[in-house]
Length: 139
Image 1: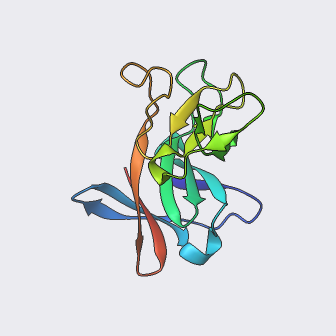
Image 2 (image 1 turned 45 degrees about the vertical axis):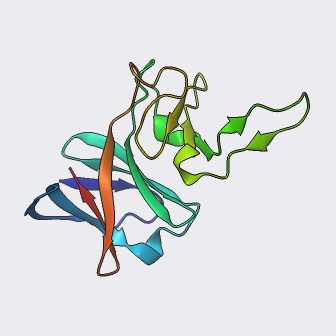
């Protein structure tokens, strides 16, 4: 069962098992423009789906640090070392991070790994694709 949480919830459907897991149709790709995100419940899991500049990511909505609703945080670039009062961000899409709204822990959207402790702390990520104009999540 899939529940959507946003101002215009539309039913999503679980289609069938596939090679990448159980397939869940979320919505049309037009319903999630670049810069938008959506939090939904799939099989008892709260998951955030993000369109970051045309790339889709799906992340478990629980921060492993203290259980915060991670997907309420901001998606930003990763800051690079720079002189004082100069803020430079990495242009590399693999460096895009989701920042926890409670304590600021940062996790890479691409793989869920923590910036500060990538070997021990990470958030679950899921495969998300565009198929025939629809956003499809695999669990």
